[in-house]
Length: 294
Image 1: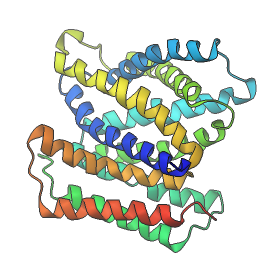
Image 2: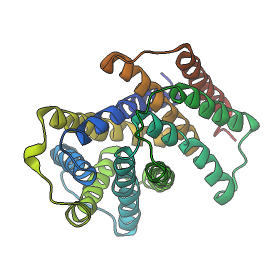
Image 3: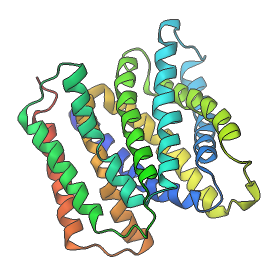
Image 4: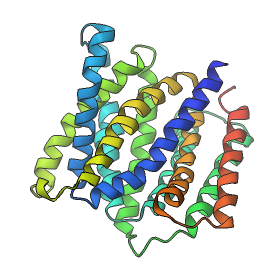
């Protein structure tokens, strides 16, 4: 199998996991966890799982001096700040609205490349991103948000989008120097370390007795599958695919979220949702047919 094909399959699987993470995060927040503590516990568990694996494969832990600040920046952007914004946004919006806003990441990535990297993507890339956003809009527009949406929540999720765009750019500079396992471990460690003082200083004291077994089950899903497995596969995919081509797959998030709602929560799927999902899949094909080859 061609390396790019493998990378596309990896990033597709990753974004399905991440799409379902909206449901898991929302469930955990409703079962005793606060936004910052949810993020910290998730990545503390992920770091603990990655440490013995890294020791087994590398034998020692070491960061090059010249790359420490880039690694720290990637951890702060992709973990500390991103999940601070996402979880606090989710606490103030519905999962469907959150998935729609996060789906704007490819558009922000394209804009970043044009403005700061002097990239000139082909017209097909712009059409693909536009079609993707349209498809996502159709998927979530008719979903019930049960009056949960607030302007503050939406703005926080937009901030999360911007953080992820920065995370992708910084992580791309690390892939030639470190393995996927090393990058994932250090980002989890540094990101979690920065989340702890936020949880202690910015939130009220955590009532651990209020957490439920379901909440902890969601945390384990987020830590093991969405953090360890998904981040390892994601960094692998970044090696083969440029940021825009990687970002476009994020539009599988709301598709997975809608399907997860149908299969796990008993939600009904309308014809408009089916049409939106088809447009998302077509947009991925359009962008990957031409993007990143010039």
